[in-house]
Length: 103
Image (cartoon, rainbow, N blue to C red; front, top):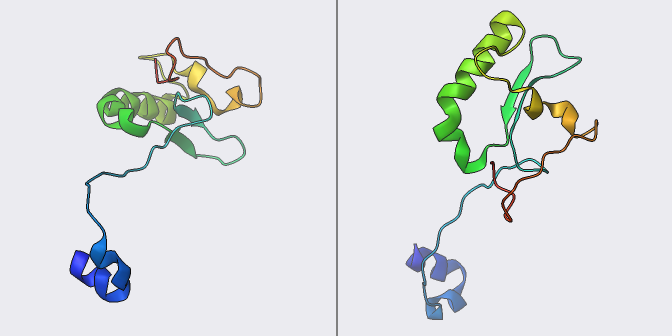
């Protein structure tokens, strides 16, 4: 990679690689995810904004979403506080942690 980059940008041949990583950090404005149906679009549901928590929460989120689709609401766990309307209804969530993580 360094050799190819240096052919396009000769100045990079003097650069030092220090390492690093990157990735998406997908959160909502208040940090907890959105788990809700989307008003105005029949049959559209949303489960988004989990960032790194999505994988570990997937089994329960999948169950809650399946219940919402099949029964009209999640019955195994109450996800109403994670609704999209919290942003327009003045119900944004607050975390007890300084970094505002899902908790």
